Length: 344
Image 1 (cartoon, helix red, strand yellow):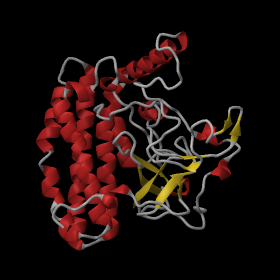
Image 2 (tube, helix red, strand yellow):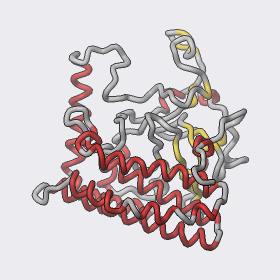
Image 3 (cartoon, one colour):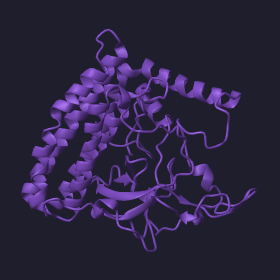
């Protein structure tokens, strides 16, 4: 995330972050240790996430009709409406983000659209068949990650044709989910979604070229860009299966940053395929794997991180390389390497 943010994209950053696996500090609190209160210390289960706000959940035991819960819901809906008022500039903001590189310090995060709210059922409910098919692209991308990282070029060569078959589905969803020509927000969202699809398939062509040259570094960058544009498409289209309005997790680590178990990123920087934990920024403590390093290190020094799975989804972040630190100790391999090959 290393480029200047357009003013119209500031709302993206403030919209919150998504829920993923965490490293948690094991300290004492007024309620006892974190492990005593149900939270595991340090490298805890990938399936848990202690600071995620799930719009469907009520983990704090609050009455959903309480004044606090009502204010929370009103705040969330107000934020979404505010975003939609400026959505006509979404396409230009998205283009600027991709053209200029990442925001200094943190990647712009595209918020989930109103289609994901419980109130209106979400795009995944209104367009269940197409939404599921688009989300299935994530499974294909996981398999592609495995084959690229294992340099199975004979298998990587087959993915462009497979992914191209999804073009009609992307087109149908874009036109069906936001059909109105009279509503400015629908027009802006269609433009933004078409832009992301275009960049996704442009990156796919770069991957095809890198595969022909057997150039692993170029293949990593092309794959990273594909993952990033697909992630942005799914955020704008409201295709994620959850909504998280947490602004920052850094608060949980104040005065206890040593609780994160990691290598020094200055002395031993994380490279592609390394398992990492984010040690700075609004998503501090989240874990994932580095899938790409951008070559213009003098300008951005960014890396692309694929966060660990949460509720069946894996989000993409572009962060400064010194934010992503290698995890230490015995680690399970990234789950993509556990996917069996159908025709190996």
